[in-house]
Image (tube, rainbow, N blue to C red; front, top):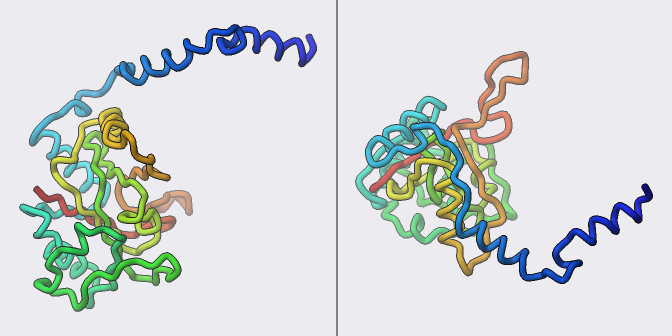
Length: 228
């Protein structure tokens, strides 16, 4: 059978070629309105405090430092605490173009300077730390969901030595299916982010002589400030 014959048969079977152009958008709309529900483990359906406890336990098991605070206004003090654990002198801290983080009361902390807004033309130096705000988190696996953009550049997720993440308690979901469904629902009429980064713990690899090495291809430390 020739290539032309195969392609001709494929074209004749397509709805558009047969004049049935209305079937495809209708099928897509029906699929989006009623996505299939896949089987999920029990801990992917947790709610309330059980879901929050699952997230914290998973994060800490992966080597993430977690601090719980009452409100977003308490984030600067928690950031200072986490940075103080890393070295005697707090490292340089950068943030994206995020009004929520820039507008906090940083002067009341032990930090020597306010966070600097990151400039893409200036590379991060060794030892620098970055603070971003997560879109949400998946309790099932202790995974942070980070949407790339001016407020949370992907570079600040992967390039600093120490990545700190502010996370609103109300944004925690149980499963990946729920996370992506919420993203789709909240982005209606908006441009979808260039990247949805899923982060589970600090960077590590076991490819070098079978030894676990942290910071091989990303932040050596990861800290989460859970507020709300």
